[in-house]
Image (cartoon, rainbow, N blue to C red; front, side, top):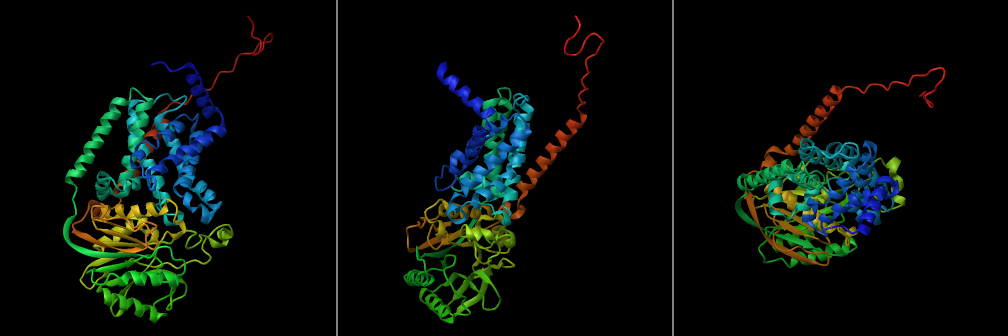
Length: 534
């Protein structure tokens, strides 16, 4: 089938603009980097993640040199950061653009890596060897970017590409082996494979063979990786009061919903983040009201206090377990705070952010250690607060300390009508699959969710329009996943791949003979280099 002449000319013109015009190319890089955000909730096009990077890879590959490839990587990374964090715009306003641009710089070296492995103008199409190497090198480079930006001070691991696969059973099995990092490696490798199939005919055979080998490895994981061994059940109630702006009315609504749970034989009641606005030591009347609810329901209540501590200076966010006789003494103070939302990094330098958005007016204080709490029936639970549920290492540590249930208390009230609630609720599925322990995600205003030890959802989500209490029969599990046992081995493997690639390319550069300097043309008395003698 012949392409119409007009269409062929239009495509040629577009390609010329992208190659020549800096503005066209820069815009294309921003848009190409933003495309993968569609794979995350709320759009939830999880299957799209396996091809979403292809336009960006093709664009970087066409860069005229490494400098342009780095720029394409930076702009694409900026677009990606803006897309997955766009819901922060009302709070941070223009500052979110500055943050996205700074974080986008992490993709500049990745852009150079893409061009060096997939070729480009002057480099030709990638050879079968280089194309096959790209299947390991480029995912490893991407994973290093995800690892660096996942540092809590840079915003944490929100929008890790592997987390877009939270509802795919095969991906959850991979997470139980190597965490969300291993899932990211597989997703990026699939994008690289599609790109190579499009640009290099000679490399198709080895790339297809590599893809088949990856599929066989994934099948082996599915068949032989340890699975959680079911060991009893626990009945958990999640109280979601809904949109109540004042602390008093929010507390009253949570109290009323909890009272309705009497007689439903629950083992634990979980309230969302900031469900209590005063320290219970300073407000014994509130502690007594929660204790009365515990007696009425017949279960301990895990509340979340966002207030100044009576026993030490500063504001803390704390998970506090309250039983029939009042607070049990089990308390966890949030360790990883949200940059700008709960504290301002280098406030003396960046404190102006409070004047252009809703950044924290006062820094909250950090806790010092994780806590595993024990319920009266012996069940041990591991609490995390808000975006701590995005950090794989925190849940893994709690499980290694004996937690049999992960409980995340959260609130996305400020971003109620954005993609944030759905994205946040999905993260607990990854934490459950990684650790082989069920996970509860309880919020003030939705979305609340519960997942089994294999990461699969239990019951229905409590949406952002719900003001209710949900009761879930949650299966418990014993056994240890490979991720809990060996941790972030996928990250270390990626580091080894990159080190080997850098060593190989560096050695080849050293062994390559330097080009001979050009010989200047001879000059004579009757001729010059402009007008040679004939």
